[in-house]
Image (cartoon, rainbow, N blue to C red; front, side, top):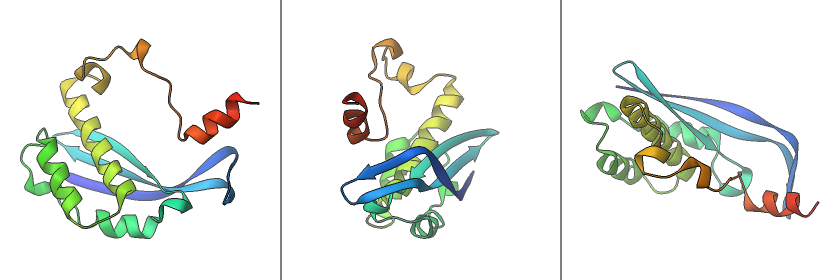
Length: 139
């Protein structure tokens, strides 16, 4: 079992603005969970207003040890323990969560949409923020 992570920067196509300012990039962290030849991927996006940085995410993720879990399908137990490592770090924790779910879905050969019994055709289209959707739809 391996957990790897590396920082990178998301380059936005258009400037993204909120009342506090605008930006053209967002720091991010890619998380990879690998076991038995399968790799699950998760991403932590860390816009400035959430208070997480690539450095804080790196420190947190370096404390996550998934090698103690023989069964990664026990998501509730694994994620509860990851959450208990320390307070905060929500983006980093979400990236681990997403990577684990991606790993499980790949091992089962199904998307989580199908695992949960959802029809992809009726699932709502989502975006990284509802403010973007509102602004976009009013243009």
